[in-house]
Length: 506
Ligand code: BES
Ligand code: MN
Ligand code: ZN
Image (cartoon, rainbow, N blue to C red):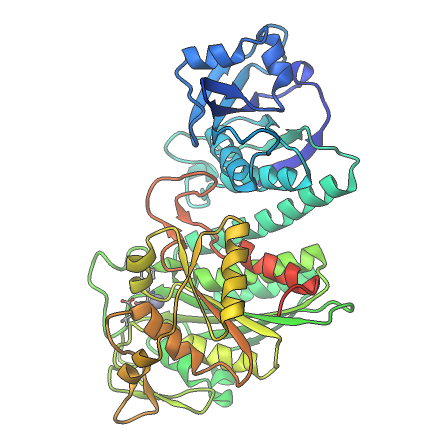
């Protein structure tokens, strides 16, 4: 992972492979952003003209490379577009900086050390640039020759120093430490998502959680198939029954002696979703290793909360199973007795996420946390509704849904509030069981949300994040988002934990 430091070094004498600067779109052409004054000065104050000549406009995501001016130790200047210049006296917003830093960090793969001279007006901006660098530099090369990107033989940027931040300022140091902890854990979530499903089955995921728990002083409890059977976890066992790799329920607990609040995070952890007996057609299953993205996000968020020492108790529940067809698999028509005692008629074995989540939600509810947030790549319907970059937010409490939605937006994770229309509930009425695992096709994402709601304990505040769209990026990289696993929802969960620690959450 890229090493991140704050530096007060002056640009000309910097020993680095490149200096990153910002360029914005001004009213009359490109404008050099604050932070790059020394570079501009070395170009005799003509850097904006030089960039203009090179065709740079300052558009978001734009990248222009130019040779350093005479006297600079670093040979290369990388100008990254910031979009429209902010109004007078306003500063660049965090997400703009995060994305620009990410674009530059990715473009610098193959170089050893870069200095980032972006406009950092305060500690928040330091944190945003730090996150952008660490998230943008990420690359999943574990399965490539020599661990390097096979296409161009490059390794990710090894070192980044942020100029303009103050190494002795407590707020700046804290922002950098936070960015480092959150980004490193988020990148670990990406690694888990990108891992092929033959190397990450439920037991293997659980073992990774156990190792991390030891390292970070978390309590961990793993229920294997025997314990699940003894406990009556019919949903998780039903979904996992078709696989040669048995399911697991992992409970990770972070406790802080000063905590007054308790949050529970529940993640869908289908290590591979073939659809089961209701098999997905070819073309719909190549990316289904990503179906454990919710569990990966919960795992990362709990570890990050521990690393940050947040004054809140956080319990993470990872509902891990592999959804496979076999002679032992659950059939359409089977009835499962869930952990809550309710019975579910399985009409479609591809609606498996809600079955494993139902058991984990009920288990989480037994501890009476102040709130539960579940995260799941739950429905294709949510992808159709909101596209590939926005998660849907549902809840049993309007105010909490608003808070979760606004929190997600604040940390740079696009989300949108979705309703739970009561009339869709009767579509899941079953002639045989208490409820069916499928309802009307229309509003499929909301139907899934309504199903989950039935397994949340009475009186507990709950929100559901459907990340089926943003969890896995099948298109090209953008901003600080790579191809493949994105780590969607990690930053929202961490921020929710921080809000709860500060007494600003339900
Ligand atoms: N894991 C899928 C949802 C999904 C789709 C995630 C696309 C990421 C990208 C989920 O288990 C599923 O198969 N859902 C079904 C539910 C249906 C059978 C009611 C779906 O959305 O089609
Ligand atoms: Mn499915
Ligand atoms: Zn699934």
